[in-house]
Length: 407
Image (cartoon, rainbow, N blue to C red; front, side, top):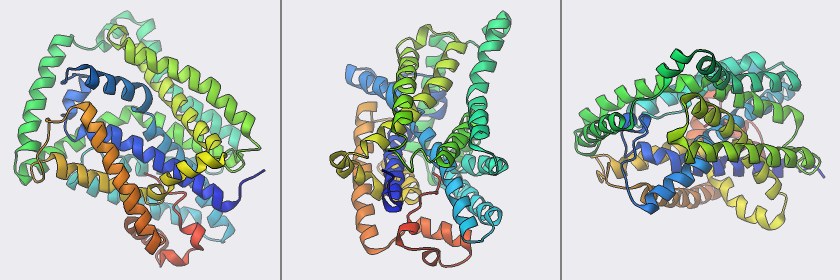
């Protein structure tokens, strides 16, 4: 039996809220650890509980939930396209304004709040996504697979065919990496944890620029997940979960098992893997596991008992734009010198606990807000820019829920 419109919105919003939890579990580390230290893969904390927290995060969370957001971005483009056509409005005009507003939000976020902003990248890649809006589902799937595989294939092919290139791609020694990582951690702790607002602003801009260049390698993967989400939407795989149950279950079993194996290899044998092996495990395993998570979530949502539990994710999910930026504000107040100044003082296990507490507070905040108003504050501003009018007049109560908004 196909789900009705309201149930479908609840599923997507709940899935988005679920992704929002995974996002803060990862992002919180970047608020208390130097970007360069993370890039060099330096472990600053000892103790089995910290190591276990990092291991579990590496296998289950890192790199997966941002891909779920990417999936939902592409899924939402198709929803907005269909809605615009049904209302006789210009999709191109609406979507370009939407992406432009997202780009502005991203720039403000990255420059003035937190350097790890993802909205800037989503906006830029969103313009490329528009090139595929008329494609058939099969074409979208093919392009999605090509984009998802292009980086690991190129890295692995170059490494295996050219031994000297392979050696050039290998990371520096662990001792050198640790020395460099510790240096940058101490430097950034002095700035973010103890520095002035001006010093933090200068360092944040520098890190924002570095983060943008670091993300370029992941652009094909993100665009590939955009197209995968668009493919799912055009195929109505999440519109009619019961009817598509076999396909989704097959994706969960095959994709989940292969993705989990690759992530286990990456996390447990990382020190012994060649660079090309890490690239394959990361760029293939993470999307497979992300898709498996989406499938598992959708299947569980069909069970009434599970739906009551998972429905709580829908509250922050309906306000994910507001909550995503609010997470950055709260983490800044916790870890930077203009707040509590806990930068570099909190280990991975406690970081994850703080992230869960923040998200729980956002669930409560979102539910209270939505009891009074049908749309989040920043969602309102975004839709105001998108439609050049009162967002609350763009549709009924069910349509107000931001099913096609990207994070």
